[in-house]
Image 1 (cartoon, rainbow, N blue to C red):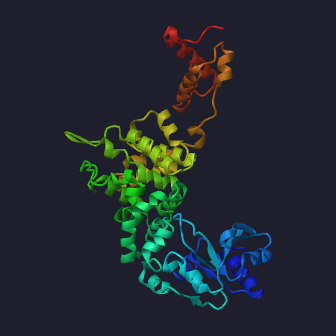
Image 2 (cartoon, rainbow, N blue to C red):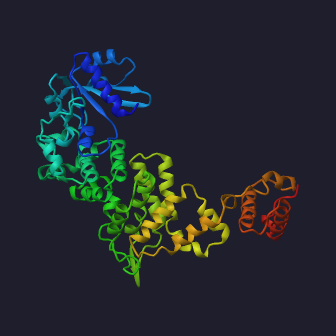
Image 3 (cartoon, rainbow, N blue to C red):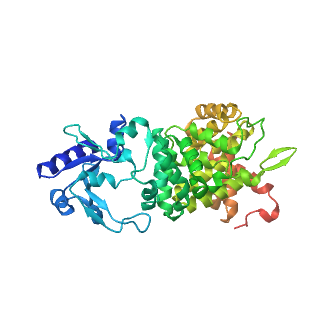
Length: 445
């Protein structure tokens, strides 16, 4: 069952039991815009105990707020009792809620007018208590009621306003925008995990360039990503970067992303984060060591925002290797093959492609690597080892750091086609060992 069918069946069941029920929130907004909703929510007059009686297998994800999660065959829908919120004390949660029977009260507690619409899936009627349909038509993100009050209730709404405006291509209503500028520092009170998740959605849901520009215009960039704000005004050599400063270059790259993974989007955002602190002018503009500095800065930033280790590792790899493409035509065959077989290498390729198209426009190295990928079969990129450490021990060698170096050299020769058999590999081991200085030779057994 799809989430939409599940949501409709939930509405039917609630109404059959004598309750009021509607689709609500983002799914209604997206349906009216002709978009496919990511998920579906239902709002109802039924109290939490009645919800659990009707849906005994539901999860109580927010019992205090009257929210349960109904599952069916892999689909899930959040069902919430109509409510009004009392005072917010922590910038996230109301001190208490009051369950309501009137859907209007439920709509008025929400964040933005375009997210406060209710939809009757049976009759097609839309309940609109906040002029949300007019704002949808005008392509406006507007806080419900007093904007400052809405943002002080939940400080993450500052980021959510940016995400909706960016993804939908909407403008932020002037009073809402002004409140965001005044209150941007409040985002510092939000947990790193919640900011991280909202930033990840800005980076991957579409309109990311617009999202970063809005974060900059509202002051949220300064609060959340000061390392990115530092890119503004950092000049680059015009012969390589006619597009302008590091900030402009990064925005152009972000604009070129199409349905990216989070890791690729972060890699693009951060690939040149090491340039501002390494900028210097010596005959021409230089950024010596910007890759290494970028890896360090990205690591600190991503840890600060509590990104998972696997994401951090891939983003660091994207930054660390993004300048190596210019070396590919001159790499040893073994080095090139190792480069191409890196995990998730297509993300490295796409970052490099966007990097070129957003600056000098030359794709020679990209096309060189792509041809190599086509020419070299997978079994030649990572061939089965000809020998292992056990073979070295059988030759009378003592285990130690030298084993890794020897096996690396043997694989080099194998990748370059200089050896193809176990016997040739063992013969090469003997040659390599005999060529090493006495102090580096393995001990006799």
